[in-house]
Length: 428
Image (cartoon, rainbow, N blue to C red; front, side, top):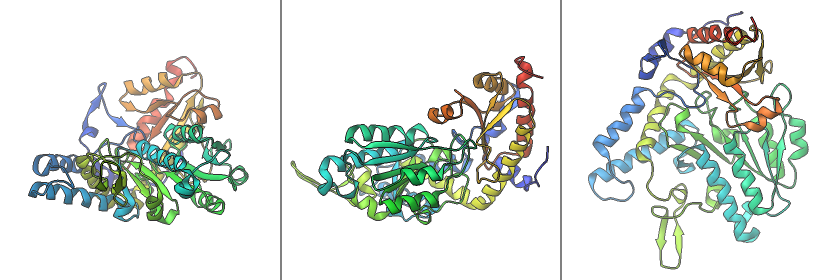
């Protein structure tokens, strides 16, 4: 195996001291955690931030007039500013959600509400029969099902951009599909199965020429790449806290200010209104227009601690480290007989994530074999069943890295993969 030039592994070892779970053992082996694409591990700084809020400042935000409520509100809005800044946005462009799935459903249902209001009242977001929503075949179900449902409710047509055999998006097909009837283009920044970075600039250009709204799933880019959502030119984007060192139950919806202004609300209730009578309500401006009810204050503060942690490490450094780790993993997997990599596009931009098929061995069996050695990977279709059908497999094994992944862990993983087929009698 050709080993890339080593990143400063000493820095990674220092960072690992901040993650208590990485010192544990599984099945008698040190934990080798290669499932960060599903959920990342949390540093103690994130755990401490949420605990400090709950034990020192816990109160309802934007409601009480007492000191503790004011402290809680300040911490909550400071967290919004920190997370917004991490993705290049302003605080009024960041809506708190429970995660990316919630954010995508919020967008789809808001567009559906606009569609019920009619083209005139609903403005540019109202959909009519024969209007088109475009996604790619590589989308996570969270960026597919909401659009399927929206198309069914409105009579719009859902279309799909295919991928080439190497997993890269078929831009020629995209140019044919995205046109005057396209009203929404929704796509992932990074595929959660292939690890490939999609050509955002090209897709945004096509959508703008068609006058379509762009919706970006940034779940697999926010933890791994420097991210400036306004600079990417997308209208809306979502990301999940638990994939970027943060707590569960918190995520962000970025929206260009004018887009958020024009979108109608999805959920209604307390905290998102300016005036209410028995017959009528007026809503606050964004982002609060989309934040009905009790908010996830502690998780938001924890997510702010996570992005401050990532900022302190430096996202350029994170991306560089993971690029080297990804190369090491790819080179090793390529040398193992009976391993078929999905999305192995030479020279393509990617993050440290590889999915693969083991010849003659079901993905679940392969995952259990690795788990017995303390190696945690994801098995299945990774909530992207159509993409797996595109490659002719029902399930794959996925190994995904993060800033705390070491070269030694990659080597232990590769050693484990080498033994899978022989163990199951599928090869030497």
